[in-house]
Length: 436
Image (cartoon, rainbow, N blue to C red):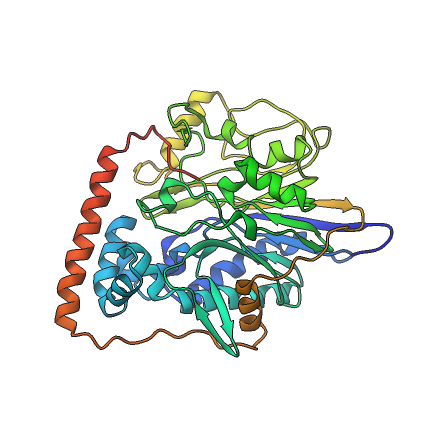
């Protein structure tokens, strides 16, 4: 609530576990998203506004929608290759017309219908639970409006967060600027966002700025949001590695350190260093086909706030207003062994037994001094779609001969798979070097 006395509100971070089957149909996806709001329900305040923050890339596996059989192929690479071929009449024209890779063509082929499902689901949940909702993030197109018609910018697919008000209206959208190697051409092949398009949104639950995962580690992003008056930093996250493994990221992948130690350079550092007042960092866990995701969600503030505690493998410190415990405590080697047991493909009885839960904190801020930003063309288009003032784009059908499509598609998918395999062989990765 905005008043001369300031703003009192609650923030909630949800740490869910995902499974590939949650994304094989619209109904299952809605149920999975609803389960997260149900986890949050006991923490939703009745006497003040509540902000619920969900995790990064919780819409990425929607590429599996309508293809439950693909989850039995065991790896994301095999599933994506098979889906590209099976969906050839839609994927190949995109590959040729928009000059994108097979994996981006696969995602763009259903991007509009998946975006509608994703955003409509989030809108309905924000309204039903009466919360401000940071939807997490998903690979979403960039749109622009022409009258009532909304069109997709060709070839563009960003890792994008959308924030909704309790009435379901759009507050803003932010694209991830600093993509990790797994998000670039050798991985799911997303489009990097533009730093100048990152805005801060004044609301009753803080002056919200979004730094998706790796962006929260980058000085240019934190400085840009700080200069606009960000008071609550939202860091949706999907850490694609065992939490207790080592990591190395550009610019110097040879400098290895424990994942939890690295995480202190994001939200915790931003708040304890005075860059922003508060930060909310939810992290998804679970093994998605052959990919491992793990972490500890956190809500952070100033260095003198909170009880002394910290991530696994690091010493206690101030600044944590709320922190999700890891699956166990113990000496470092014991924790690292447990991390290996949890990981995809370990074959251990503990495989995929991660900790889920919800964190919350009651926060206070003075009245906002931030001026609402001018909506981008993309935000105007999204608002029109969500308000029923625009028409969702629909896929066009190709008239190309099916046999010709099949032949070219098979060649393209095999070439793509070979390039990825060769790239993996040439990439010197330390254990746990799956980027954020």
